[in-house]
Image 1: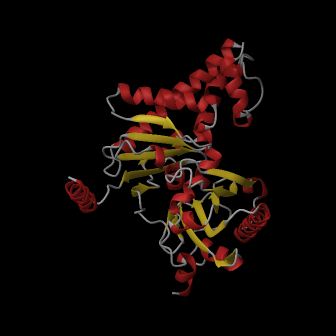
Image 2 (image 1 turned 90 degrees about the vertical axis):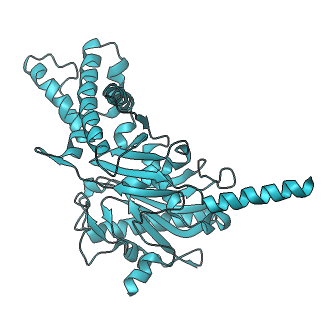
Image 3 (image 1 turned 60 degrees about the vertical axis):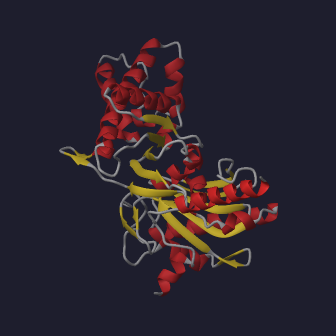
Length: 372
């Protein structure tokens, strides 16, 4: 089909389960219990709800150490300050919320580990906006301790890259290998329930072929939740952001690849449509008549004189892929992203071809014998 050709652009399919270095065993699992989706118990909003529950009885007596500001409006930095400030009661209150949230996160994580797709997971990376705070880091560490005390042989670690940039950097791992030899940067898009972030990501491939040195050269952020745009309005704004970045990269002399990697919520079909999970995005992104990659290629058919290629995958997958260079000492690992919801993905590192390894060993033996 013509639309399929537009979306794949000859470089692969969207939402694939196999990449050169990893197999994506699962993503966007929606676990439920009697109260609804389990992810709702370990989201950014869930922490604020827990904090608010602890504050309510204190407010009645006028003894709330965090004052009159609603829990959802307290900045992350203010909560971090409360942890180390002179007000012991405020610190105790925030610690109490961290403890309750860690219990919830450990329960949800335990449920993931019981699924077939997450069996034998050795390490879980925690990403998302919640991780970008001292409160989030302590909650992750506390959850790690709880899981270990319950007998799980698992490590929970905060994502290494800035959570605001991890989704962009992860898009590098969706790009075809020829990009890294011919170009030094790509365009990446990270679409979330509240924000859309676009960036130019420098590969720094010559410094580190595993992309561990990659960095975001420049990015633009639009908080679409504040503007409540239509779907078409959101795409139009996204196109403008990308074109602005293309112009800036060209002026700077960057060798920008004709490739756009997209990180997006939901289950991504091979043709670039979104099967489900995009309910927090502006308008109906799950419509059979809407295809984001095709829309972007129509608006930006070329980059630097070359045909534009686009690949899109789930946002949790993209964040997890940014961590791939650091997960080489384990076989199976996962990512949970704590944001508007709870994103999730599980990976298995792909082994080198044993035949190739044997042929290499055989060649080494022959070389050794010839020298002898």
